[in-house]
Length: 561
Image (tube, rainbow, N blue to C red; front, side):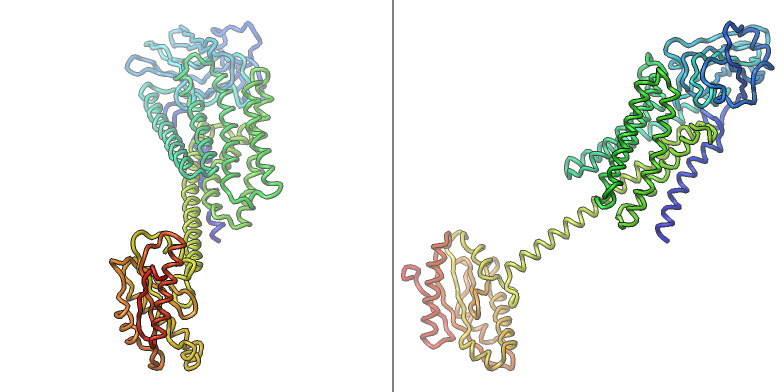
């Protein structure tokens, strides 16, 4: 049930973004201005614009523009009957399309005409944010009757003239401000995510972070070109060249997004054919972007159809990828499904619009911006979540390693250091050291009296007494059997007689009287030879304590050892 809810949410987000493009029809500046209905007439050569603009009945208003095929066309607007004045200047805005050049003829109520023509750059001088062209109408007292465009070399893949709207100067400024905020916000988001994940990659060196940075750069470049800001930064660039670069960056972004997903998920998600298929589709996306960039001037219709067809393959790879992630119970499935649901759905709807299944609109044409913003945010959250899981795995591994080391260094019965760990920490300690060796008296008799379980309890109680009696920084260990050791600096050593007194007062099982003998020796402990000498001295002292009647302590000189 939870999986279905997440999938429904991702589809809903994508559908809302896509429906936004369908509900707001053919607008390059939101809900402002006046939509201009247009009719089209194929240019047969040597046609007089002054005559054509006065005979709108000659134009085709019913046939969808894209069905007329490529070529040069005349496009006429419906009657406008508004004035373009200094106090209220008018402009006409329309979508940026693949075309060689365009001329705008304006008919005024006094019978005069005004004409504006593009140069080799196309509509670049008139590009506004949102990649829409805005051509100002000359200001006169006479009303604007209608407009006539002469479009040369139109590819007509989606239409000859899309989304024309009549706007005032105030509406144009408002549209640019709103779109500036939108594109600047998205660009800032991409830049911030790039810097953040690049810094994380420098610290953590996870491959998926580097691929995410590449994807963020691709998105940043794509929004720079698709927004029209590229034409502002490079005013000499031809608009068709800007469109070619836009294709290339979109293909690069799609390919980098797939490679990021490939590196982000667990390896078992892409086991077998799916992993190879992802690389094939990513390579196809990048390749078709290069194809459009290099060969669009030769035949843009063919390469555009190839580009749209390859983008349909995104659905073919994302669907089995999400299915496989669900089957293997991936930790990142739901964040990824929410983030990618919107861009995949909108890219498919844009592709359907390219094939004329859906009607073109400004918001659908720019839906990639909104959906990829959502994807970038969700992918960033997914990265943060994955880093959290990696941190948890690291902490668990460290904890397991620490526990393993403790188990390897600890006597399992008493919890004290074992002989190996004791020697590893003891040898090399600076300064004079005091070594005490304590051995339980008649421990075989204790085992016979209490049984082995009782004997183990005696060992544990003795170990607890030694641990509580040892000063801070001292080493307490079970060397083996019933033999224990305490090592401490001489100036903070343990008084053997006080230790024996504590052992005598320790309550043993069944109030059995248990005693111990202690041998002590002092000296340096900087090497293995020092340890053997010090241990031999304490062992000699322990033997003397046993020989003197047990339950007592003796000390030996290091020189004697």
